[in-house]
Image (tube, rainbow over all chains, first blue to last red; front, side, top):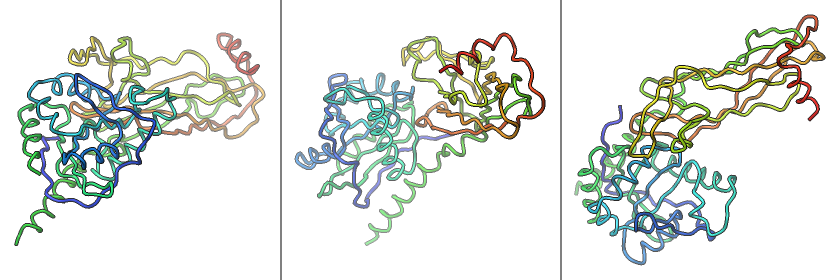
Length: 169
Length: 185
């Protein structure tokens, strides 16, 4: 019922990410570094004049896992990903690997709830997976420049095209 | 000259398209917890039924998966501490689950329920329960997915009300020890 959604947003309001969390750390997944902290990622992106790729995902989301294992690991995709600052925002529970110290279930679920509300407020959906590309605009704010809403990625070529097209934004 | 209007339209189209995805409240057509029978005598055993109905094309999951690879694909039910009603017996998943493999997610066998399911659990009304309405509050964490997407698990709070009426009766022997144990806590 949900058709391929590959959109380029050509403008956007000044939007704010969830607050930065000093006790979080990036994780290396399949050779690429992913952050779970959008605010810090936007700061890095502003410094390097990069865009931020956001992977809205979940430990309970099978299609998220399939995309991350089967699509994100492809060389062509990884080549494009390297051009972005990469963020994974879990909306059900944030995995322990993203915390510097042990985080209990309550903390991991609270952070996920913050991410879920952020996704819903900004992108008007809670669907998982959802992929978004955002651009820092100063003062820690950002604008959304693209959304890829296919869910399970059945069209890898379209996904790569989405990543490539937004490089010029 | 026309750049701004086109940009504005693009945003509206994009956000509207994303929001075309049904919300969790639309996907869950019906969810309810009821006691059967709704009137019961003190000491009587009743059945709590938790019924979940989903929009076509969506499915939910059991309370337990056999395959460790599918351990996250579950719903969770939490029952109240013993009061006038004590929940007894094993909570089993409904029969009729479909199963499938998801080799790309390292899952050999995953159970799921297209369109929803009904869970049942036995409960005993305490022999000394006062006459009148008794409400049990059950927490239900529901995970729903379709073929391409999932939504984050939705925490629900369900109320089930039972009317205690009539003369006390003996507790079913198969649940007596369990009720006594629960009351000692």
